[in-house]
Every structure is written in structure tokens, then in C-alpha cells.
Image 1 (cartoon, helix red, strand yellow):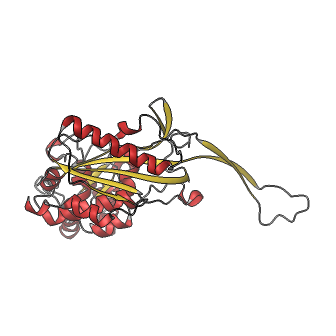
Image 2 (tube, one colour; image 1 turned 60 degrees about the horizontal axis):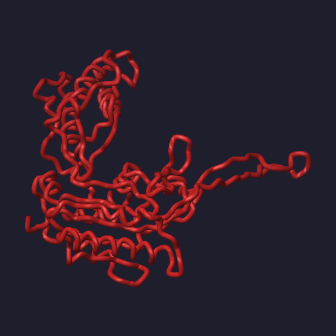
Image 3 (cartoon, helix red, strand yellow; image 1 turned 135 degrees about the vertical axis):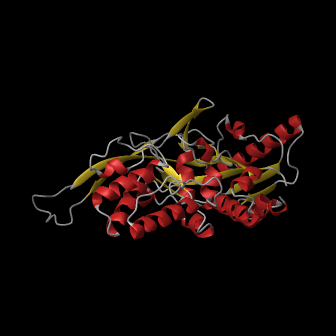
Length: 358
């Protein structure tokens, strides 16, 4: 089984603001001396992980990332008949297993039951918590030290296996991410534009109260994005305890989501849904590499069009790198909607091929 799978995708988004900075502007990056639109890897992974596609494909094998698990535990204990003071004490003991609490002393607030950092709970850990809470309700006895052994090194959380988790206080239970996702960038230079808009009050009678009931401004950009991701299939299989079937489902969910799922930012305002127009899937055991260097010089539309020129630039750069280093994947599979070459099914089959062989 080849260790690495690399995906290179080209996806065109119409006017959009998929991923905003702290000022509400579309995120950007300077590359090759030109400003590009950017979608952060965090935004992409969040969109994929929470998508219907991902949730349906990996039902029962997804974790929960939250600071608020203690709040949930507390409410369940109280609803089960445990006095609030006792419930808060037990809750803090359980929540502390997964991270330092926001407040070292219980001041009676809900925030005092929250974990300081987001923790990613596997399904097995959630089950262990549920079982313990139910036992506490039934026995009316606090948790023992043995009861608080809730963390699991082995789990079936596909999202944790892919994107990892870090528990600073208990590094033994960390999971190294099997998937690396780059920030998506436009292959061409861009200019972020402003949209001035107004809204009319429906109850305006058109007499003295004519004009806009509200005025606002939002910023947007459009472009053809290059996205690169690399999956270490050996590590994925290890993270999933050697379950090859679950690993195959995880690869399918990841690849299909990357091809079809867009971040949700400002979708109601722009309806900027899009699917990848081009996907290149490579497998191999040699050191992976992005092909972003193909776009250091911004691509221009020219007579053939932006997408055709971007595909040509990417494939030319791949050939040059493979020739120079002599370690390319001669069997790589591509899907190109512009020419009708290949399909998503071809990409999925190649990405998971050989996994069952270990």
C-alpha cells in the first residue's frame, strides 16, 4: 500500500465572502508579488467535518469538539435528581480529565464548568462519560479515581484520526493528524470589492418616510482557487486501530467533501456553492509536495480561458518536478470537467485503492 495520497483541486467561486478576517473582509495572501484570495485550512476542515456528506458517510464515527461538555454533564446530573452543589463538584472532576477548567474555583457560574480549550471527544469517550453519569445518578455516589479513566488512546473517531487532537496536560492521548490541508489560494491576482446595499422598510407608506430603512456595505471577491491536501494513509489506518473498512469510508468522505463542500460564510448573501472543476490524485511513498509553485506567476485568462490555463500550468509544473526528481506517480488519476476527462468516482477509487491490503 502506498503511504501518501495527494489531492490537487481547482474550484471556481463566483462573488463570495467564504472566509472573513477580523474586519469582515475576505481573507487574502500575497503570493508571487500579487494579492490572492485565501480560504484558511481551518475553515475548509470545519466545513467538511460538519457537512451532511461527512456526517452521513461516517455516522457513529465522529467526535464532538467543545468546551461545554461540563455544562452538559451538569444539566444531566441535575435532571437525574442530583443536588446542584454535588452535581457541580462531580462535573468539575469529570471535565478536568479533558483539560484545565476556565476557573480554578467554582464561583457558581456555568463558565466555571467549561474547559479552557476546545477538546475533541471521541465516540468511545462520550460513551464512557454517559455511562459514568448514569451510574452517578443511580448510585448517588461520587466518581472514584478509576471511574475518571475516561480518555481513550484507541478510538474510532474518523475526524480526530484525520485532523488530530492535542491534550496538553495528557499528551499520551494526543492524536497526530493524518491529513494536512493547505490554505486554498486563487491562481490569479484579485481585487477585493465593495458591495453597497440598502433595504427598504415594507411598512413605508411612500409619503414622508421614503428612502432606505437600512444601508450597509459588505466586501467580496471571486476567483479560481487551488487547494492541496496530503493524506498519510498509514497513519490514518493506525489512528483508526487498523480498521481498513472505516479507513476507506474516511478517505471517501474526505475526498468527496473536498470536491463538493464549500465553506458556509455569507452563503445566504452570495449563494457561492461550487464544485471542483479539476482534481488530480497522486499516490506514492516519496516525500509529498504541493504544486502551488505553478501559480507563483498569476494565471491569466487569455484566449483559452482561466481554467484551461490553470490546468495547463499545474500539469506542466508536475511534469517538470517529476522529471527533475524522478519520483512522480505515473498512474495518477485526473478529473477535468472542462474536457470531460475522468470522474469523482475514479478519484475516490484511486484514493482508497490498496487500503484494505494494509
